[in-house]
Length: 627
Image 1 (spheres, rainbow, N blue to C red):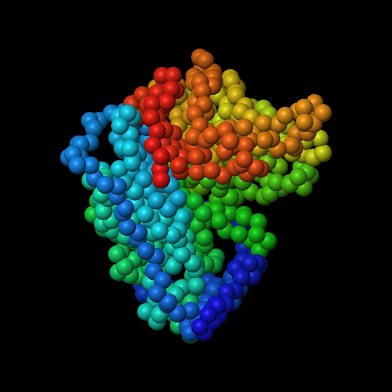
Image 2 (cartoon, rainbow, N blue to C red):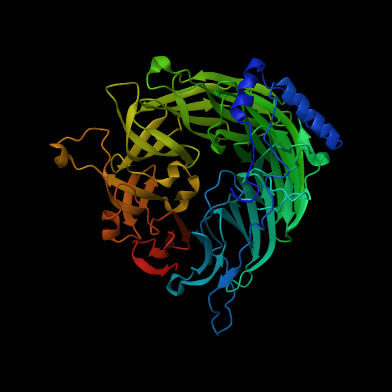
């Protein structure tokens, strides 16, 4: 702390949130009329009145003389290109078949660390983006790289001749007019590059948002970014409004573009939604005065933002949902509602034929079943009003949802405690959802992916039930193929378990890491494989023993209902000695993180290189180092 000292004084949110328990009332979700404020005074009165009613006496504030601007401004970075070859740049290749990012909704793109347009691969490595000429593979080379500076790169979008880079960092927007830097340290930077000349990317627009990153989507060339910013005020001054900076021109999101609901208990955060035209760089921003948003679901026309509502003991008891209609640069917050429980992730939600479906868990899981209070639920809401029209409650007491997938009139849920119940749920009658079937098997699936309408792929962990409690020990990575054609009797028709305890795959946490091509019956997953050697433990190793790392790379599977699941081969970027020297935790720039297809070539990507292998026999064609 230098100069006058950093005298930021924050009231712990725990104090304010604990006070909410005295007035928190559980009730069924009702459509809430979302309105905008007429002016700042109305916004100020709303915040102060709600906080008083909720017995939150203070919110985070800061002395005006405490934190002064010292010249920091989140830089946009500059493109650094490799030398342009003397020959003229070749035109982009004719349209060929290539894989795209694994997304939840067709036509709604999601930011990821690797993208391709069928000729070039755009990949994040550290604080740089590399543009790699990938096709044809014999001519693979690095065309250019873009230095992004400090901060964490969230992901990329590619649209025509535009590359959109999303980063999170600290203080991305200049101080307030008084010279004070806001007390929160989170910000999101969106940079748009012209890549019509891939040898020389050009930064054409920089957009910075206040708040921490929640999620983003791209629909028809428009990027929608959602952030969450705490409500705070400067002592003796006004509440600070959320801001957006476009090429360093800072604008507040005015109260007239800030939505609120009278059902909000304590307005502790803004949810900011920015629409960005990837081609022109045009920006529009709106905000909702809510609690802290955690995740979103997006269809072609709507973005649903979920905000947990907590009681005084930090048991999340309800999820507030806001529906935001998007159409190009238009952003309209049209409805809000509530359901009991917490949402796992985006796959716990879905929009279908005028209804919004959501799966939640309420309560908590304990080591012993007698101490667990968890229950799992599925709710069907009218998408227009977000009123509950149907519900299925009380599934799998004592367990929690590990994965969910909505597919048309069906919902598939995996809950877990000691075995893996896969529930098949009928939603054809929205007012009367019902369980049709249930399958209990060892292990669980953290991610469910449709093979087709009758088969489902599960990615998770094998488990061994513990003798000393109501739980199981995680083991190797498990890939399952489920037959759900008879929804009353789902079956696991085949499974493959890779490695022992300690084996991991990023697919368990990030679905973008999975490559699936039904036409080729191809499944590719990055796996860090660990093996337990029983001879080191007298012939039998305990189930809690962590294995030693023996492989990191891409496992390539053939998968089909007729043949089941077969390992076709493995691809790695690591040398053997690198793996053995890694110790208990493996961290190498040559860990494969993504894979993709261009024509009949399988590309694997790590932070250190891009490798091309023939899809026919997995023989190596070429590779390029990212240096």
